[in-house]
Image (tube, rainbow, N blue to C red; front, side, top):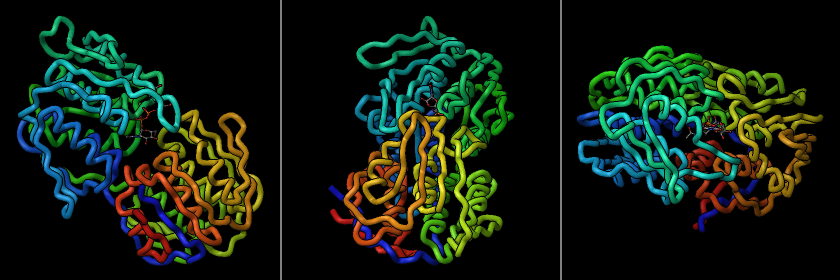
Length: 423
Ligand code: UD1
């Protein structure tokens, strides 16, 4: 099993470039199911989750070619003859369920494994299914799979008014894609507003979809007869950018994160400034230094966009664990997203969990230790802790990190970290 071995203490300096957004690329790949002809995506990150989504599409019968060097993916979905997202792929990557909306919209049926819980909490798909139901599908659960099809097996999905109980990203995306080839107009109220939703909408529009309002509470989609494959460049990854910016804030002398889109991460950057981290923002880069302080503890509450992103919560916790005073993190999106805390405490952090709050008392330094990555962002957080720790930190189970970060160790090495991947 591969692991990262980090020799902490070397201050970070230099420039690092952000890759394409995982949480956009995966959805655009799923959306290609809606189109006739060829879809070409650029700036696709070379990560495990992209490989998994390629596998999902191939399982359906699509042709998928990944050009690792160029970071491009070419997809043709004319050969789709299967409508099943199998359990072995869904359990590996929950985003596999995003093929459901496009399959229902274009082919009228889908069989998708119910994802179940994961290391950050229970992750239901009830909102996705409720949306599909209002649009005219019937579904049943059997042997761990949801089988859904258009009522009576004929015709198309129908446009509908859908009020989401919670602005779920996945449900917004699945329903928005389903609505593209439906009859009539769909309105999604209380929609998720993340920049990746806008990226998906822009891609669908480039294929011929009629969508208005993405990025706001209410999205309107008018169904069209067909969509045509298009070429599209995936937006930059704000969570990856936030990870490198935080690395600079924890242990950086002068780090420039190229491709960081500050307007997509305003609350996060505001928090860093409140702490007293030196931040300089320009059009598509953020320059960061830990500086000399004084540093102030802060409180952080995760919320759907434009709130503080839950994906940066474990990463922010590492920074706050180095800031004098008491900081409190409140996790409002996933109920189980503090699994990394025990590992971080083994490195000398002082964090106590009380329900969905983490009470963090800042410490001077961490001490290197063998630790286990329990999920993608938690794994990245432990690596960041290792950069500041005295001595050696070994992070195992790094397959979690490789699911979502392209060349994480290489990029950190480039800005001066002493990190090695050992197989
Ligand atoms: C996406 C991101 C993930 C991020 C999360 C929240 C991808 C591939 N993943 O996940 O990195 O952490 O957004 O920003 O884009 N919920 C329900 N019923 C549903 C759907 C969701 O109860 O049908 C709940 C979930 O259990 C969770 C919350 O809503 O507590 C947020 O989920 P959602 O926004 O759907 O996240 P994902 O799209 O799964």
